Image (cartoon, rainbow, N blue to C red; front, side, top):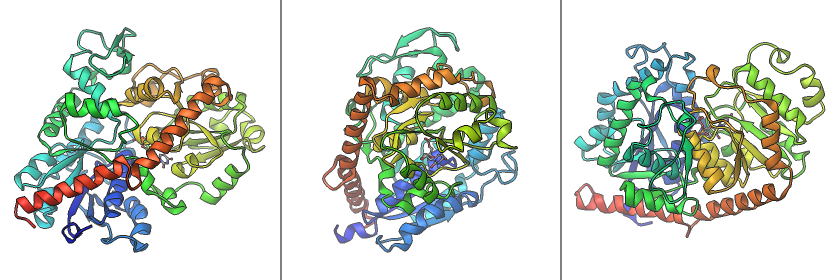
Length: 491
Ligand code: UDP
């Protein structure tokens, strides 16, 4: 890379939720590995987990510029949040207003963000889609703002179709009435109950409008996807939705060694070598991994049904549960711990799992996921077929991509969008056993999914290597920003 690249500087500013911070940190590592000077802006409460992820790469001396971390004090109290509440995952209240307050707290960072931008004057900022106001600040200082969505292009195109054709307006919320999403490259059928009832969260409707407007004004979009994964939607997003787009993923593939793979997001709650040793005792492709992302706390009634489903299934498993209190006997079926876990059929991780390490172990052959985009893409990148179990947000859309378009998963059968965990239908153990069986039983359907999943994983791996499509998009964006710097005289 020429000398002009040396000092290109990009500032990354994630929204404070693990599913947003993790891929943005990977993104910063990715650009840093291409010689760009990268900085991450966050709040003090989120700094330790980010530091954990960047320390190794900073210490390895492989980077031209170590990744820098800048902190902005978070106005939790001013925003009416509990003291120290700096990450969505620490919101324990079921009250949806708390989430709205959290988003608003970020808006109080407008002036401090402007100060940082004025001081650092980066060549570009990559900010989270949930920080639409950063567009105005960046525009005032003539710094190009790139949006980071952290979801699939498919879900962005589907959301655009829903807004554009006002699909939801004529169908009552919660109804099982189905419809086809207009104007998309594939025939995608969904039902009204798989979408939010926006009357329950009016604050969010206004917020999503602001997000859309800020995106239209921004320099472009950086997506954690790769062209070969969803080519029709990359084209649709550019041509129909009308955004400039750089596909730079799968960003998790920048974590190459065991340490990097195990230090994403948080300290793991299990010794990684113990986890790998357990996996080493299992046959290739035999284990099912069950994890519902970084936020979801499973109600006890649901954990019991999952346990029953896993007990009845033939597959060995790793189950991740969060925030369960008391003795295991309080939340697991009687005898489960001794009969199932004790005999080595299953491993339960209470807390944070080394997800990338697990998914990439050859013993893992299926992934029960809530369809958060990071998890979907990590599953795809590891070549592992999925059992989809969406809960809320855009997870029902990601499910359609996995099941209908990519054909690398089957649904567990949840059709109701519900924001609050305690209000969700408890999925029965038998439904779980059946869905796991379809992916793990070695039949024709399962083998075809596995073959497709491996093919997509290989394409993803090639996309980020030199000569691949994502590698090229990163290079093009870097060159364009260098070119812009020359024309604006900031060189
Ligand atoms: N994750 C992890 N260990 C866990 C739970 C989650 O490493 O025990 C990571 C996972 O690999 C992914 C992210 O947290 O990168 C979760 O993001 P996703 O979009 O899947 O779901 P969200 O948490 O945003 O709902």
